[in-house]
Structures are given as structure tokens and as C-alpha cells.
Image 1: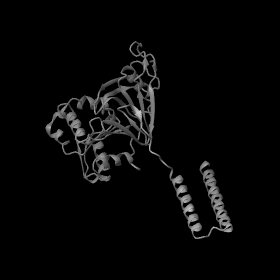
Image 2: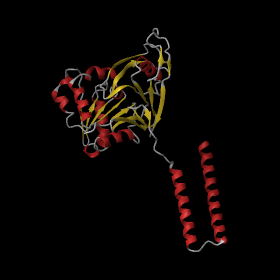
Image 3: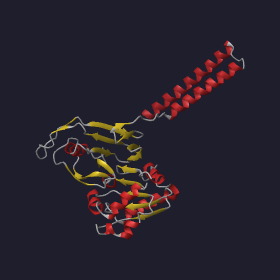
Image 4: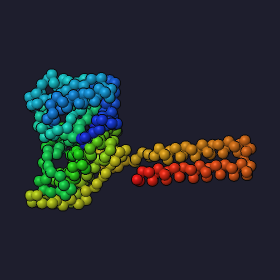
Length: 330
């Protein structure tokens, strides 16, 4: 059985309007048959955070939602608690303090159960802290800024669902470029992945490749330091780091990236709805003209009348579009 997909959500996912990312998670978990385990250990809100996601997932059609909240490493080894993941078709880790989540879960029977669930095809999702912990290395804490500086942040161990990576969340909104660059400068074997808010990096396993696709309002930023030139090994405390040759990928919604080969994949062709409507109308005009010709209605006067009607329609449409643009500009 193939491994389940990973949903790495940058935080602040839409819970009120379209709820696109959460809908995708419930659908991937089985839709009406979804049995979702919520792990809220990172959160300081207590039962309230479970109640929020319980209500959301049930409203989106999930059959069952259960809480799995260890508050100590001992509880993370409780067989009864761990057993709640055995029947889950989806696992969702909430936001909060990722260092707390790592400290209480990583290296425990609960962590092993999450990895086992992923291997048997269960979708594993996480938002904010729940996103960061999915990588092999995790940002523990650190400040904002666009310039990488020595000791700008600290790294802890993640669950390792995604190998040889480090994930950061709220990426653009909290200006976390510098700290992710610092990490990949110090550890060039890692691929740095920054996920914006209300955005998800979805990783599927296809023919032994890990394929990342993007859904949501923002973008996923990827730093590939394979050929980096850096002074991270000798830079003094708090000094700016040299980071030259890092390959930057900005991946908006619809983009696909092969994490295994570190290459951008061909993008599917997206056509604007208005453009599709115009093409459909033009196609209909051609079919009408072909029909008229076949019916021997192709006299010069008939063609002139048809062209006049087409020009009149184009002028009318252009005026409407111009009026709409002017209204919008005001």
C-alpha cells in the first residue's frame, strides 16, 4: 500500500468561508467515511481547540473525530491513547508551540503510530506547529528578518515524515526568510520549505518520488542549497552569513515540484473562465458559419450581414468591459 499524502499547512487556514484546505483534508481522509484523530498537544487552548476542529470536520462531512492529546512523554506512550490512531483515516496536528509538540511526541510510541499510519496510507496533516514537525529537522524558535545571521534560530528533531527537509510556517507573513536560509546554510543537505498562511504544500508519493503540489492563497518557498557557497562554519555570533548559489523556487497554487530530484514539474494549463467563454462563443460562430455555408446561405450579402452583427457584438462587449473597469477603478 502506498504511503498516505502529507498536508503541510502554513497556519491561519480559512475556517469560515471556502475552507478549501480543510475540505481537501476531509476528502483525502475518506469524506463521509473519514475518521479523524486531532492531536492538539502544541496548543495552549485546551479542549477548545479540539472543539473547533471537531465542529469543522463534522460540518465538512467527516464521520468521526477523536482527540489524542498527550501532556507528557509518559502519556504519549499510553497504549489506549496510541490505539486511537489505529482506526484513523486522517491525522491532524494543530498549531501552537512546535518545540512542545516535538518534546512530548517525537521518539515515543505515539510518534511511531503516526509514522505507521502514514506508511499504511493515512493522510497526515498539520497546521503551523503541526506543519513544522513533519520534516526531519524542525525550526524550534527564532526571530524574523530577511538576512540570514549566525545563531538566528535553533533546530530540533521533527517526526521525519518528510526526510532531508526543514519546514517553516507563517513564512511570508512573519518574514522568516533569514532564519530558513541560516538553517540550510549550516546544513546544505537539507531542502528548506517555507509555507505561507492559508496555503498547503501537499506531498504525494508517485513512483518513488515525493511530489509537492500547492493549494491556497499564498505560496510555498523552496530553498535548494545543494551548491551553496557559505561562511556559516566560521561566521561569528550574530553576524550576517554568506549564502551564494542557493536556488530559489516560489511556488503558487497549482505549481508542482519534485522534492526527490529538486526540479520544477511542467505546469498544467489553466485558462481564465472569461477566456474559455470567449473561445466557446467563437467556436459556436464558426459552427454556425459552417452550417450556413452547407445550406448554401453563403451569398456575399449574407456574409456581410453576419460580419456586421459580429462587429456590433464585439463593440458592445468592449464598451461593457470598459465601463466595468472604470467602476472598479473608482
